[in-house]
Image (cartoon, rainbow, N blue to C red):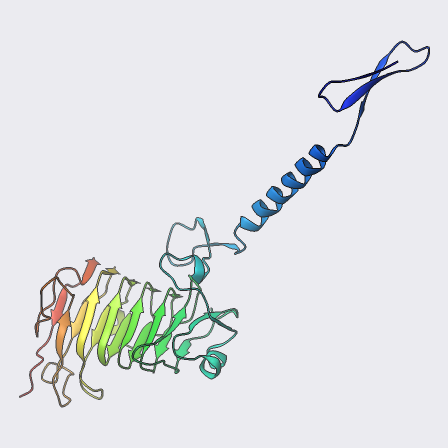
Length: 292
């Protein structure tokens, strides 16, 4: 005898002579749709998992595993419009307004930026936490952000250009030379939210966290320095030497250094409190900026 369940989608078959009742499943369109829905949800969950590898910190941190962020996942970061394996390829292919991301391993080579954009459309070189062996910028109208350098050749970051922004980078333990963390030269520069750790003042080197001067380089103007961090600085956290100060023996005037403030004009020979946070090292020093 077959008794069809009212809503269960299955029936009971009584086997002849056995006296037992065996449930038999009947495939219905509801079951098919339910299976498809579960499969789609499982696929979406798998695609949502991070695809970047986890790596141990090498910049003097706790060593806890941390995700290597892609530039597109960083807060406020523009999505990549160009992917390149090397800086040379990026210089060949990048156009004004591009955000360049690197697919190749740059941890053992210095990132040298030679291709800039335009005043309205700078080229962004986005690291997303990638390791490089230092950064050199020789271009105008660029943004370099999100790279980390561990024991690079000093200076860890060196920039020479106009309308250049360097932000959200980390330099740890720069070696050789004067041991500086960041050196900058040019007009309309922004240096923001960077961290420099462990500039080494041994062997008589004046290892500054950040420095500019006007000797064999042009003077700098309209430099915005804000919310940077210097940890265990061997010498001065920020030095800006003009033509008449120390090694600054070149022509011209270095002027307008400081952080922006509401309703405030950047004043010559003045640096506000928001520019640099420093630990165990010298304070902030602004040298003479007026020519003789």
